[in-house]
Length: 555
Ligand code: GLU
Image (tube, rainbow, N blue to C red):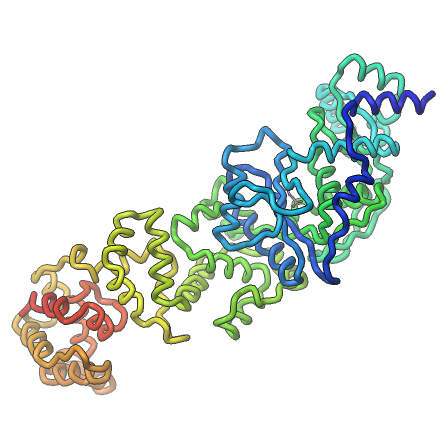
């Protein structure tokens, strides 16, 4: 009789035709992968915001999968319809694509599903979840709960006043022990309900759980009868995680450590179905130092929490990835030093090293240094392409200039580039390039005679004119750097400047200055700045006409 009523309840809850668990097991068979291959995933919610932490998890998960010849997939967790924002799913796929974090399965940037283990969007999987909620009910692993939110609030305040552990468990789990008749009656009267897991756990009992990053920890067993299906018949996160990571055959769940405390629930859910749980690896969040204490990067307070921030600044995607790899595995930096030419994908990521990054702090200085290194390894052509692409989206005026003078711009980017370790490390973000190089372009260069004299107070206008004239007379466009510098020295000496820094330091008063002061004259006249890249190269790139025109200002 009791069994009959139970069946009637289940048939009312799931009146529709559903696949059986066995059919789904057959539809999503074990993956045919070689030993050691990891199947990892990220499971973002479409909130319309791509957090740098999500990118960090994605990169780590992608690396573990692909370095082991496994599979990396993206699952969209959109069962919380209240939080969903338009365009948010596209933002996830486009961000991953633009960072070159390739996933094998999931919804691609053309909004198509790719892969045999889908759908990869939870809102399209509701039938699958129903099959298993039904199975839980059938196996007596779950029950219907009609507690209203007022009743739950009341329960909570009683628990608070009695200082007992909050939640729906033990004697507080009123609907766990209700008779089937009562449940059926409520169901027939159309009252809202949820389905809860019948936890077999005892909170006083401690269990050992292994985490790939945190090691083996002891935690109290779960005794909460958590909700597995909400009143809208969609699953909760915990239940969807169980079903999806089982059917999608995930081997390693790599996720933020805010989920670590839920592990006893998850382990218990897998055990209740007799399924092998995946391995878990909980990553510490990226943090920030605020007044000597660490806190999580906040979506609200920190612009750098949003990856769009780095896009606007024009940090190369490669630099961000290298920075994140460095945060994850501190030995990445040494590896990179030893292998400057290698693709970062050749680096072997390890969980062991990840455990040392428990307090990973976001550090702009470090990011900037890495970014400079990354850009210094690029060819002039690559720099040109990257700056142009960035400018097309963020600075059209500059994009047009680069397009119009593409050959000249590429020449500019060759200066002190392509000489290995000695390559100039000045560019860290594309947004700074315009002001870095604008003096090369006549339209954005202006300098008057009086401004020149003001910046060179140690020489008279006549002296400056003489020096510049001598230089122009001896200048030969084809001179090597050595020949060019030898000529500068001759002119310096002839005008009373020292060409020997030791001597100059000993007796500065016997000279007008040293050879660097002579170079400064050219720097000001050609670039209107005191610090520039190699002057000889600048002159070569500017070309004799432009150089002479600018120098003539003082002659
Ligand atoms: N949707 C969850 C989140 O965004 C996913 C956690 C997981 O990876 O399991 O935090």
